[in-house]
Image (cartoon, rainbow, N blue to C red; front, side, top):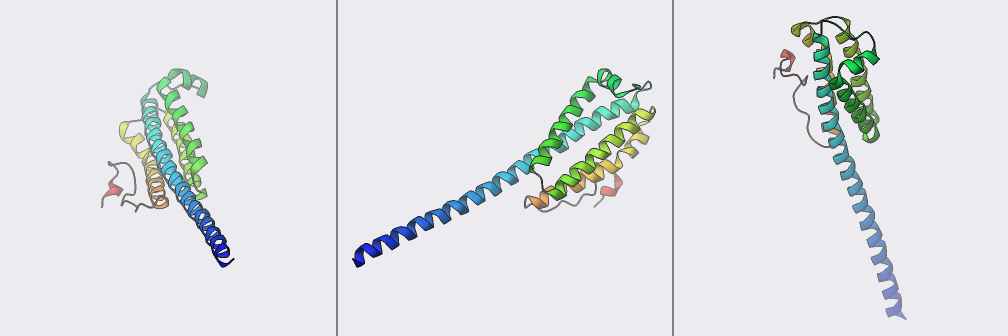
Length: 170
């Protein structure tokens, strides 16, 4: 009888241990998946932001501006493609991000809209439109460092993603 009771208790403890081990492993895997997904979508978000800004730069230098957004879409296939990529990457980032990071994504998106409106206002010089892009470079650097912090990496000492911005001096 004692042997049977010991076997039942031992078996029960083994099953409980297996459940605890499976739960801990599952939790680590979910955490790893979330971190990897966050890094992947954040990389895509910053890359698509760069493609969109490059397309906006070309629009900013035009002497004749499209009069409305539908005309903009047909006038610039590069902008259309970059904008679609930006929208897709913002949705992906919002799906896997914390509320803090999601707020930063929305701040970047608002700045993208402001920058596009400015690009279409007039023909810009290279220097003038670079100045207009200063804020989005700072927002992108804040986003980059916040994502690094959330995924367990230390921040990097940058105030902007633009190497030409003197505020980046270390």
